[in-house]
Image (cartoon, each protein chain N blue to C red):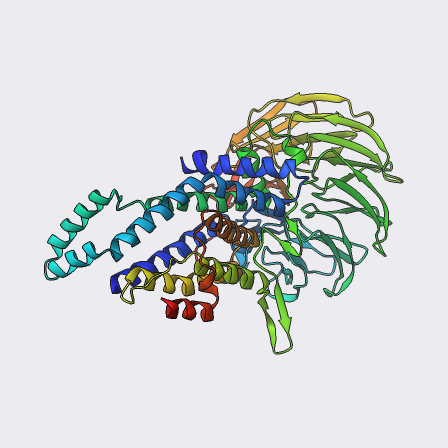
Length: 354
Length: 263
């Protein structure tokens, strides 16, 4: 009888452990988010947010100091004009950190889901998209001013022209809301979930890419569709607008340049590996990364300037920091790699385990 | 291998049901659970049959005589037991094998539910690569994980009480899971007249521990799992009822005593 009881309890424990294994294996994770000012890069990657010296790639501080299984960070931290570093965690908490030392200024814990997308700081407000379907709008002290509800999670950073805030939701809609009051001005249903930020043109146009594989140009006044371009497959990130051209990649491994006025394709490349991150336009080059770990730099006509392969998968967008190009590969040997404008590696940062 | 043959097909069945029934993931889990229960019904029926045969054998005079005769010799007793199994056409694994076969299905089902409920871009990427080409992925994903008051991809939300400001997980689902598990265990427990019946004692213990264990899981893990537990319990009761194996008296202690007295 005793043996049977022991077997029974062991069986129950094994069931518990196996189920927890299922859960742990599926703990939400994503690719690192990077941002930078003139001297420091900030990287949100899993257990911590790291501040890294752009001069030499040395760690300046990390938050939290000691890894905590309940906390993880993937949204790129954002600096405010009054010297705060805002970063949301998968623990449902939005933190304001001191960018000098990583100390917490304040935290906002009223959201009910992950902070997947970075915040937008404008009009002395923090526009923070949350996976609990809401856009939370806080003042710079972390006090809620208003919130706007959509019908699905919001993973993308909104954009603003000061009068209105434009946001895309996984509910397949783009919303234009009054930037001060949060009142809906218009909304527009598109062909798929919106995973990347909308992009504002200076001419009253809003460009939006969808998981349905399309890129749309909408009129910011009323959301009316101006043109539509169909890419081969899912478009994961925001397109980038530069000198009248829109650049973006898709998960089939195609990279496109469109005429932003007409939506006509200027050129395309087929690197052959999925492109999930947004491109970066720096100087005369357009840079984009692929899942295979290749970073391509092409000129505005699509001609290859240089390319290199890093260890790991380049899911996130390359980011400019000082005169460097920063990439954060997933499953690579280093967390952050800094390259010069010619693609030569200057340093690589790998956090020391604490 | 596990992924290709268990989790991915189950995920696609789940997505297929979700697509058919208007994008309601709660309903999809319910129908998916019923479907899995129907598919594994023959296993369950054979398990019940084997258990019953085994119980009848343990209550038989012949077995009791064999036990008395070989009291001090465990090896001989085991040999005699195997002989008796053969004679009565009982497979010693008949009652546990169907259960063992169901375990990977339960884990696969849970993993497929969790995979479908993406909570981050990387999970969405994994899911898109699991979806068969026949589906219109952008039209299907991401799934709407809200059902009634729940977010099926998350553990129950915390509720805050005046004396518990740090909050506790909402226990509603856990209570329903524990209650349905208890009722199912009680209703499906075979009657035992032998006070020394070890399997009956085990059954009683399971009826107490399993509701607590599954209730704890429901507080800790994604609510989608709780929906699965509840529906699985209710369908289980229905399956036993259809096979005529439900002991309604087990739920009413008074009725049970009276039944015992009348015997």
